[in-house]
Length: 157
Image (cartoon, rainbow, N blue to C red):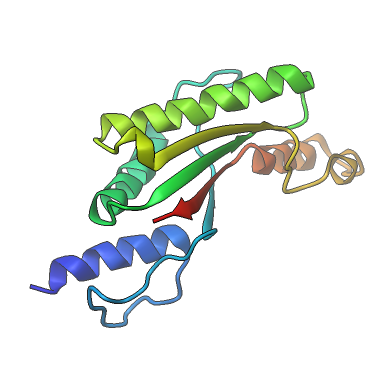
């Protein structure tokens, strides 16, 4: 009966980047630690907070892990790029984080296990000065796309 557990641990390790693939696990193994993070691009239409279908597979996998580890508390931190006003980006990132939370709640994750936070443009992977120094628009757009990410952080279990 350990095979189903291996699947959950495999999915969990893929989601949160654990280097434990291929190992044997027992129910007493520690898979997560507080402040473990996963940076993931969750796709939305431009200037929208409607989730696109290509993000659902990842979110379904996350929901499966959260059902298995039913004490996990995840903070969903949504980020935008630097285009638009600070206030607009903050509101858009809040709506996107809430859309992800709503999707996970639709997948039967209890709201007490989900915290949605919008960071706006304040926590970029690539600083704006570096983006502005890039030579082509394609490079700049790619860098901005990397800044439009979602961080899933374990804040409790």
